[in-house]
Length: 194
Figure (cartoon, rainbow, N blue to C red):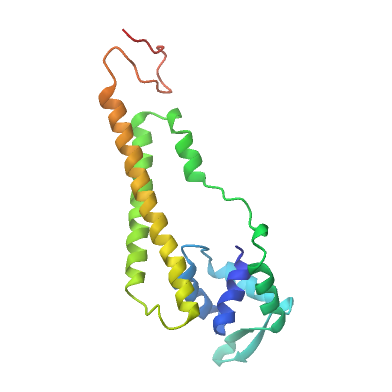
């Protein structure tokens, strides 16, 4: 997903100013595609230059309201029906987990605890959002609810997975016999068994 298409998508639902769009981003898309004010305003300028959106109204103090154009709707539809354009998913957190054996066990545990805490916070935020809106209004609300459900399920999975990894790490420590040294980056003794 790109910021370009996220902005087009929001404007296809309802015109708005840059401020309005940023607020809607924070309320609805922040979990999928976070955007800063400077990123969004820069993208709005590019979309206007490309003829994909237009200024539909200028309010007090020069506040511009943007609306999607027919060309913008066509671009949004083209992008939505071309999922093969999506880049491969990369996950730096999982890459770090893959390499946690290079850290001391206490450091690995702290990193895993931080992943668990983030997942719990996100899950709580999504659960709060679930109770804050009427999701039955129209198709836009239904599909927004579907995206939120994915976030709820994903964060629940992350909570369960991080807990499983932490439990597994604890189990490994408990089961390590005194004659078996758990390899750590700082250990110079080779593993041995009696």
